[in-house]
Length: 185
Picture 1 (cartoon, rainbow, N blue to C red):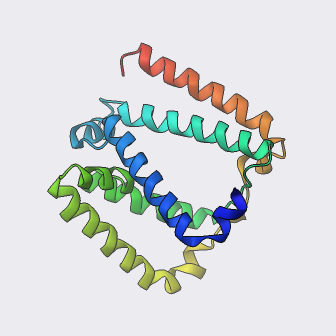
Picture 2 (picture 1 turned 90 degrees about the horizontal axis):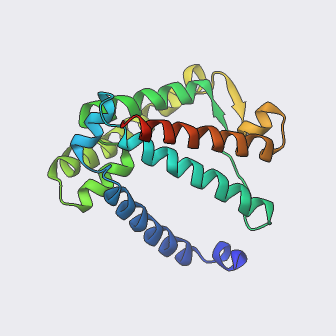
């Protein structure tokens, strides 16, 4: 099956569209496309966004490593650096704080008909991507490539087998989720 998917671009695009729509639907059902919920997260008053994201991280981490373990998936991490992480985090954070949406939630909010997400979010993403693309050649060497750490995953960085990292991290995140739920956050 994986060979079929890898060889057919149309199938890849169709699967991407279907999975993207499913992702947006689940974001909406989880309540994280609601502006008030997102602002509540930024004000540290409503932790719905954090709980949804932690649940996704746990599910994705366990799922990917299980599929990798049985030979149905391969990891292909992209190279990273401190510079790209800092610049990307700042751009993401500013956009998130100014508009109250991240790229995933803005797509879900547009699907729900929120005009602020369409006019501010989609336009902001397109303008920001264009500006970043135009400035990329000037930013790459002096800033973005600083602190290059290559194509490392967390287990590789710690020089440990994936299971030794994935299982304890999943348990810690589950404990954090239980704590947030018990505290009513």
